[in-house]
Image (tube, rainbow, N blue to C red):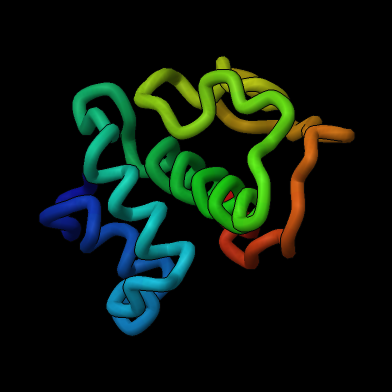
Amino acid sequence: LGPTHQSIADFIASLVGEEVLANTDSLAFRALKWLEETHDEDRYGNDRLRQRFAIACLYFATTKSSEWKNSDGWMTATDECTWYGVACHNHDLVALNLTDNGLEGVIPWEITFL
């Protein structure tokens, strides 16, 4: 984390705002809780933290009524670049291919953090 952020929550709040994180029903809140449980600060910097946050929000937004057909790696502590349907270059997410994977819901605005 950067010198201005004392915690993962501080960093995510700088992206979405504290009021969003205060809503325990929000995608951002759910993604933050997942990050706090799985994020390794020594392994991932702010760019990767933002990336993991964005795709966690995508997952939570599109699994409300059903599970994906293939969710290999998703929502685990493993490198997100190894997750099903995620393509990266130098650990920067460059493409998502989740076609015909059973996603249901609305693509969340947090995806703009990619």
